[in-house]
Image 1 (cartoon, rainbow, N blue to C red):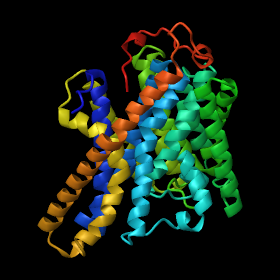
Image 2 (image 1 turned 45 degrees about the horizontal axis):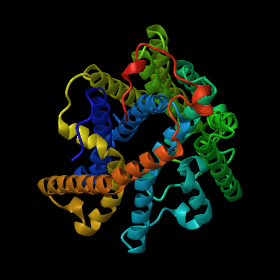
Image 3 (image 1 turned 30 degrees about the vertical axis):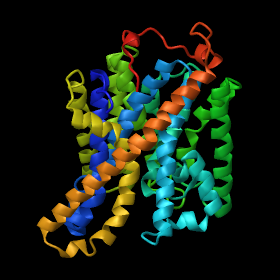
Image 4 (image 1 turned 180 degrees about the vertical axis):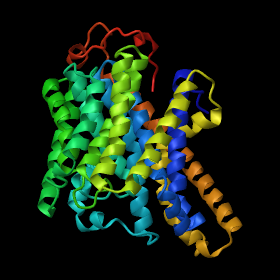
Length: 430
């Protein structure tokens, strides 16, 4: 059994776990309560987007903390790769296996554009190429990976403390630019998608290689910052879950909002700047959906989404110094595998219980609870058998790649050594 998380990190684990569980229940709800009731709730609050926005806020808080704690882009990227790719590859393998067994159908884009899809899966950027992932929930990973690369670039060029400007700026571009932003500049056609996927493999691969080998780091940093343009011009190419490029920019803005909270908490930006940026993001997300979708329904839906996310995050933050029950921190640890694999378990549900909707509500609820339990067990097994060994291997490789004493610092470290905010000594491992 893993040791309990430090108090300062337990609230983040709890938020992550809660967000994952919300997404699981959102995807399950049509089969348990029926499509009509599911859509009736959806018209008032989108629990899927609610869970994803919580995930993004937590990522925005955690990733800069992790990067600056390491003080080395080499250690950060080795840790990230061995943290996220093992479970991701297992999810792809399971999705292909389930499809080969005839229990589900692969996404059309995986079958119709196999080479392009494979290239897009290498970088985790399927959604920003314009293709569905092998597992539909992979779409969020496109924005996570983009955020990692942008933040790494800002770190290299000593721009990482300007999170408030990035959060507010991306929001205002989305709000004001809106319909003027192209949605599929790089992915409208088969050829464009393949070229975009191939270029991303080169850019992302060479950037990570530069960080790991400590060569051409400034160039890699510039490329990382430039990737913020990808969701701005290709945010809704063909099949993307994101409805427009402006919404893609808003998702990045939400992640930077999480960074703003982190920097304010550790004395790296002032309270007024933080409050201004967070207010711009919150109102901008609501205003952009209201303005660009042009309906009062969109206004009320996104008021509910943003309001619920803000209240949840604030409650968790207010209790950050309290002991969090082990169940919640455990749920946070398995949250990544839970998020990736619950859809695959859901694929099997109709084969285990055919015509679930024709049964009484007690039976449907019981089946729903059994599904959640099965998803949790699957995620726990993946965490113990895939994630933990992957993380241990990553730590070993990072130690071998960077055996020098702390005094011999790398170029990537020297270019953006963290400052001395009042919280610098409080950083914890993530």
